[in-house]
Length: 458
Image 1 (cartoon, helix red, strand yellow):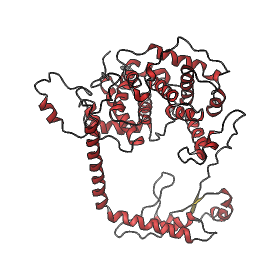
Image 2 (image 1 turned 180 degrees about the horizontal axis):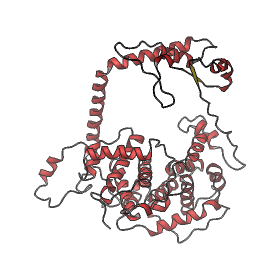
Image 3 (image 1 turned 90 degrees about the vertical axis):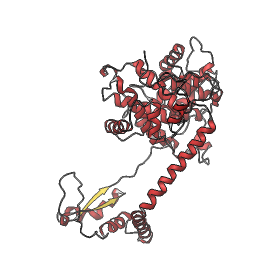
Image 4 (image 1 turned 60 degrees about the vertical axis):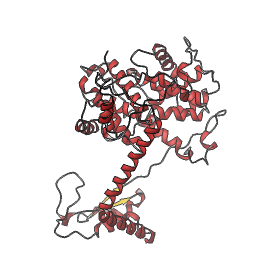
């Protein structure tokens, strides 16, 4: 099984640092230096340096260049931004000086309707229903009300057919009541209530919200609809994405988001094997724009693909992928769930890293990424990490915060153990080599048992 064009496994030893490609450097000079010894086409991660100092220096230059571009663009648009800032100040002053009977929404609507029209330009009406625009004389002013109890004072205006007001009711989100942990389970959020890094006041609601969105983004079983892409080809591509994540030093959330975008795209679009790496690189490019503070440049993705695709191909594919998967890319990720579950169970870094190792290995397995719950997969990975590291006393805490009992996770835990026993495969070694390093506590080198006993009493 050959890797897609430009995809190459990570051949470094377990003690070496991740491969770091130079960023924004002209490759002409490098090719001239090695022109005599170079007899083959350069692979995506072939002859790259491990010098961290050069990487940081080039990254600093890139950041400075990006900042200078932002400053230049900002200086050109000073006129447009100044007017918007003035309008924002007007809105704040109007809101502060308004009486209790006048809502902020009415003040905002007044500012919008009283804004002077530019000369020599026709007025544009707001189309609420998506139909043809109405004449300016029939425009309706929008009044936003936050509380449905305020409907009574607008009833007369709504019943009047000649009224020009169209109201929109915005209901406030009411989170569910915060559950009380059972006896013997520590309330992690109350314990860390004053720690702003834990976000204790909203943590429970955030993960309730994530779980409610799992069904919306669940990937169907799509591999039968792909005529040229197989499970093994997908695994090779994900292994390459892990290598890209290491090389660019991306967040782990970026990797999981990229794989999610890749699966959702292939679930709705038939992909040729020649474009498989292009789809994977595009998914990673989109994920970088979501999770990274300083995402890699477009030329960096052209480079790691060994110039197999052009800038225009990447940009065109980016628009196509976003159109197919939709622009709602705030996916519930198993990585976020396992980090939450590890915290509330007071697991040490070795256990949490092992759970992350299990989840990253599962990214390459097709069956663990389709028709499965991310929160359940994260809970099962943490259970396996607890069992491998002989940790006790976590059962009730994990059941309370995750919503899954040990009997719900038993089959999935055994499947994850069976997956680890099958690795390492010859062409899929990146994840294992990554977690064999001291930075990740060498968790991949821990011997695996033949089987584990899972009971309700842990």
